Length: 191
Image (cartoon, rainbow, N blue to C red; front, side, top):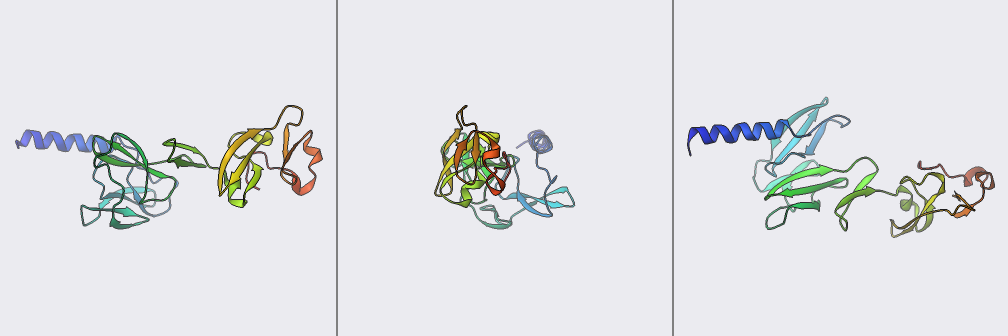
């Protein structure tokens, strides 16, 4: 390969990495999967909010929960698109583009939905158990979800004639005053 092509490839890789959004802002010191396209065994080390790239010693390893291990995430034979990560916990998922893998992360309060292949709001109240719970995903005081097995299966708004969801009775009511004390919902915030 000519020296010119090697130099061009190195410049292209450097520009691609510089234009990428690996960031340590808001992260504790530690190791994180890189969200930039590149080899699977490259990862980010955050030290005092500064990004440093490191590599697992084996090219067939990647960062799994902060340590190098055998990768299950792969773009081999997969079409371009987004996939749930088997190697890194929520909110990470990975993106395949022409055979290259890059990790991505959902916004706060979102998780990657394997069925829709998109980030969706995570209903934290479903962790409290099955049944009707207040919604934290943009419905304010008049939203609720039906939870089954820790997941929201129905997301609804209360009707106009009973516009408020009561956390204590788990029904829609005419006024927030009807829900006294502990029954009042936090209007889109965790209890």
